[in-house]
Image (cartoon, rainbow, N blue to C red; front, side):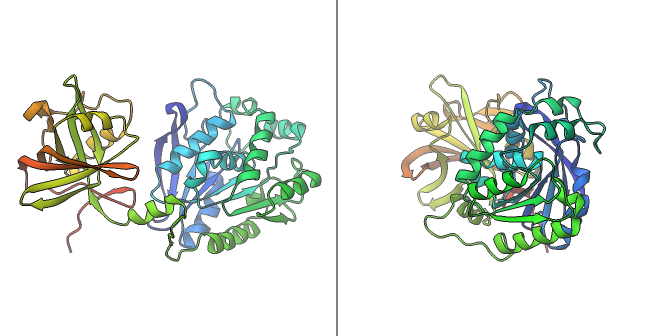
Length: 401
């Protein structure tokens, strides 16, 4: 197990435990309020033994995660935290949540978040919760005594109900809904109502369990979870067909390892512009041509379309921070990056593995991208360094047999 951090909604620093190999299919386990990632360790061990890569984030204000300065513990903030984690993963995981964690999982896949997950398992939550029972439970002593007490008052029950009703009516992902037979938060009528709202989901009631079925009946919970994973998210190779989810195609394309570049130019005012790109390849030696692709949604697209020259800076293994910096929006990317102006002031990043200065040769449409073809007019390279590599959504390094 290893512990890492990531930035959630509003820049809050959040902690996540990783179990198993990143090469295995992913499962994200979301704990309920007043707990921490520690609550999932038994389940995580069982999933790792079954060949899964498990991530257990601490909710904001819980465990090792920071307390938000603005005190936001509403469902939207929790959901954006989870989305931030999901976007950073190379493949789509199955999300598993208990009680509050289940509500967060469903909120995270609402609207445009559905492409971030391969399936969802919820336990101990429904749109028609008993508000008084929820308040009593929140006041009870919890395993994570260090949790920010403000989390107990940050959740608006009306918003939660509205969100869950909306998600259940539109969710198309594989969905397993678990309820403890002794759950005080969700009445029998509420469970039946939830079944009507999500008719395509599988509904299972677990005897001898309350809202936290994972803790009350761990063996039964793990058996149902593993069955769901093997059925809905098997370890067999994934397949994409025309018209399928674009994230599946993205995962398939991610199996092609690439180098990492930063493409640079200047805008109409002579201000340096640049961003990280790995859609780069050589085209021809005579004439000397190369190309890179830029998304139509990129804020720097206009600068590259109007400029007559650009540079492709190939990064080496020590320039991962540079790659990260030029991939983040809203940051002065050149403030902490050494560069020298080449032809027309185009920035060449100092110390790069290679730099290709190009005269724009052609620009083509490429679906949701634009394809820039450049004629190389100058190049500089350092053959004694190793390249920075990117494969399946993660940085890699060369391995010599």
